[in-house]
Image: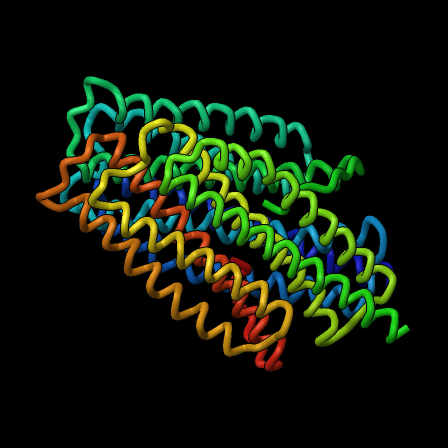
Length: 218
Length: 218
């Protein structure tokens, strides 16, 4: 029984790693679409989001089956419950990538934000993709050093998010209302993506170190 | 054993109802603070959010204890797993109320949005509060008729959300960039609050009718 449980748990883990990789790919394409006004790439991200959703649903069903069949307790139980929460966060990260792609598609053939903000947005997007890649590796290897790196990168994203508002609300901002709306939404989506990455990284860290601290799910 | 399980399940249900009521109260205060530039009320919402978080964490711990002790299967298991997801959504709804309160506090003593948008925002806030109250009742009574009402109200919120963008992006918009940012964020928070209410309502409806359709957690 224990061996079956370990094998099923491994299946869950593999599933989470795969979803994290899909999410990283989605955000990489979405930010490229956003930065370069590539509408075909944007369409691809939007069209493929259901694949991430379907994997998250399948993983949840697997986790529920494990709960029913193996009836895990203590740490094993927390691992399975955490898997459910991690899949929910990954699914939301996919949604954020889709929202970024939607902004790119909506403004096409125009670029989404004025020139002055593009380097900031590009850097936020780059950090998001890097965080998602590290998350996949963290889920795969449980190397908690990666969790610290993800947290540090989130701090950078938060700083950039604030700097977007400084720019938009500053004297030199010449953007139209549509630029302001787009910058506000894009920055919010990129920041939320990073938040979810940190929430997941914390869960993996707690599980890996046994240092479990209950906290709000998101 | 079965009796104990039913009693524990009842505790979970009562906990969810209580959190939903706190969330409705928080959004009611937050939207009042937002509409009337009431900074004391805004502070109250922000200061009290940790109470919602703490209740959500306690409820999750109870659910995990039930999983460990009662080892439920089939529909019983789905109810407990759903409770975990519902508490996560309620906790996020509390965060959205806090974000609305933060906008009110940030702009104080100014009002958050220009006059032309206030009726729309007030109506979105009113609908959000009503949805949260119905959600508490739905969780309490399992009267699935309420789930349909919540869905219909969400459609209204979505329409109003789009109308905010129409206004902000229209010719007659005279707002500053800060007005545009605030309107964008406030409308997004109010819309997300309603989305979470619908996600929860659907879960309760599936559980009540046995018509379980797996779907992404959020």
